[in-house]
Length: 156
Image 1 (spheres, rainbow, N blue to C red):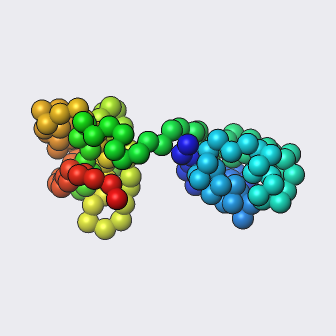
Image 2: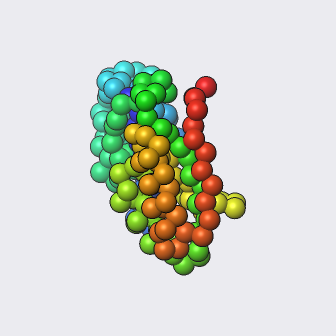
């Protein structure tokens, strides 16, 4: 199981969650095995079960841990087309572009980046016709200046 999370961090003066070493260790362990029982996590971390449960509850309540999902092998579904699309966005339109791309079911993940490209979209489609349609749709989004797409052939 893969743990999906966003870095927010324990509650400090700003009201935001600030991670400490115990939180980071817990997240690292859950990324390795999202189904690990709390008792096993407590044993590995050398803390009480209650400590782990409290930390886990707080991380989930704060939104630091978004949820749990199954991780599948790269060869699980080779019939689909997977691609990475790097996207350059016109400065003030980033939020608008992100909202539009999040609305596309074919966009599996969306990342902000530094460097030449502002966003990276992970795309998953059934066939080349759908792939072509999605690329065209993304390129027509108001605020998208340029893009470069690579089809993923295999994961190693």
